[in-house]
Image 1 (cartoon, helix red, strand yellow):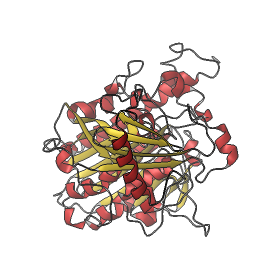
Image 2: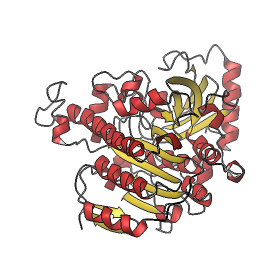
Image 3: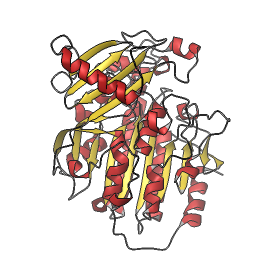
Length: 452
């Protein structure tokens, strides 16, 4: 069965009677390893991302939107549950989301939403050898990759559909965009939640030749036969084009005004070997310091735009701090389910912040990353960690307002990340009492002495 046959079959099987819609549709779009500086709304000029820019133009661009972790799996678990990794059980790359955890999809389905995940579901592994599956975690329909390794393939020959597999062809972002468009058409008369989890620009570095051709010769390449820098740019512009087709589908179905759209990335761009040096060449996280697998701003501050016509201000830029843990309670509130937000979430309802009606709450936000969590020594030896040693690195961070304390193997650096987003000027020696206070809060959150 090819992809066209599959989509036609599921359209017939899953079509539902029209119902009146009283709540917004929700489209949550998450790129994979897309750096802060990889999008033109944040200043990229060597390529353009007009559809991401469109969301910012028709909605609000957020300059301080934070992932929940430094690598894919814990970041996504944080986003989906509204909880830190220390509370949802996913702290490392290979940890599996416990089936007892409640996802955004499960919460919204309780409110009557149709739910779909198209793209990457990063499966871990439980001690008993089992693992969670999207169908068990609140999604009515799933089409995508279950494991991290599968998500490296941008031209897959097969793909998961619910609990089975179907043949696939074409570029990954097109496959997932096509599925989202079909789902939107089927569910246009009923509130829906679509989690569109693109796998670009994560490795492998590959893109359709028609898109790569636009950038051949534009960038220096170590090997003209393997133009990774051009391919990296093409991956991003192709993903942006796929996003644009989904936005056009909302327009076509007359749903744009009734749909809350959030675009972001799971963490910053990576300098891992499989990236083939492309993110390093393009300085993808500029002007931020650091990268994926780091709690510096380049690892956790991610591009973000939010659009909801008539509710979220258009053409606005917000410096309010939003964290992945805030998405579940915020989306529940937008859907009219504020009273049903799980009591144990760590995040805050930021709906009024997205709407530009009020400032964010005064609070402290936390991160942790231990490089050895869930990965083999051979894997770690291949990773690039900038100025940090790879093996045994332990990083923690706490942020209060504009001030962020970064703890790297016991060395503490205090930064004002609003005035100094590149984290070039540590303030630790100037404010030792503040360093001590934030470190104490970090230890209390962690529940152990992180100096050991």
